[in-house]
Amino acid sequence: MASQRKCRRFSSGWLFILGLAALREIQAAHHRHVGQFTAVGTYHALLELSAISFIDDIEVGSYNNADQQINIKIPWISKALGADRINQRRHLLVDHEQNFGWAIQLLSKNDTNYNTNHTAQLLADCEIDNGIKIKSHIHLIWEGVEYYRIDEEVGHWENLKPEVKKYQYILDGPFWTNLRKRYMNEYCVNLLRKIVGYSSLRDNVPPEVTVSRYVNPEGRIILSCTATGFYPQSILLQWEKNGELGVWGKETSSGILPNMDSTFYLRLTLEISPEYSGTGYTCVVEHTELKTPAVYPVPEKPTVEKPRVLTVVIVLAVILLVSCAGAFIAWKKRKLCMTCT
Image 1: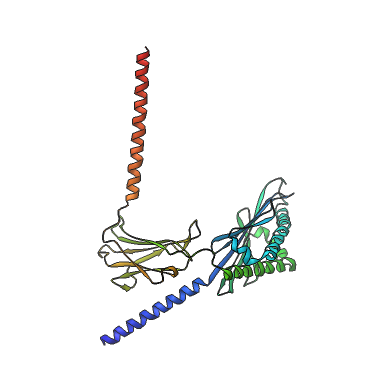
Image 2 (image 1 turned 90 degrees about the vertical axis):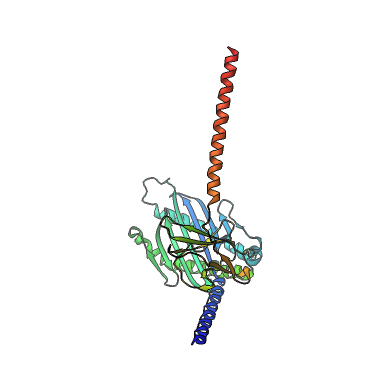
């Protein structure tokens, strides 16, 4: 019986590990492309049109109608796309200037002041998994409020503001429908496939991991495992106790978030009851750049927040120094005045 239990536990462990490996492969093959268009204008004229393109939360290109040029942020992307495709994209953006100007004029025609500035935005996003399109959406936003959106898989515009429902026939018309489908297929999905199929957007970087232990005011033990600075974004953090995986308390996750340098951040916390000692816990981190899972033990004693204390001490020291300097200067001035008299 004991040997059967060990065998079942061994088999379950391997199935769990294989499942996690499959999950990592799926995540690594998943990519997202987001295009953000912002137009500012009055009833009479378009003042500005800007566009920014992101792939996997990394800015890859931008456009502004001031110079009508596409600015590629990562040099090798120009080689991956080719001059002809980039030029086609630039011509499409130039054509969009007229389309956005017309949209602003239509939506602002009831204004009493035709010189008022208005902002119209279009957000388009698409996702692929192993090269296959799985999602794509478009959102139309006026003055910061979403008016329409469409799920390309459904193919029907959803009206979110009743007062502009009368314009839906325009969006459903053949011209705008064909333009929408062309853009999403050619300039969102196919462009995404072309770029991610050519090279990685940046060098792979392993995570920097810190593990800490705190006690909250209620006396509950909070274990925290933070991984930051890693790329690609596929990563797995989990808690072990005495070498065994399991659910040991209330787990919360920040979700994978982007850093300013295009790397990623993830924090996993575990809250356990005060009757447990909190010893024997480790944070296990898996990432493509680590080659094998890395194990980080939780400190035996609560982590002391030294940086915050040190900051307070430094601030108080500076205040004291400035006060003393001010008092010395005032005393010096009084002494000079007494000498003069």
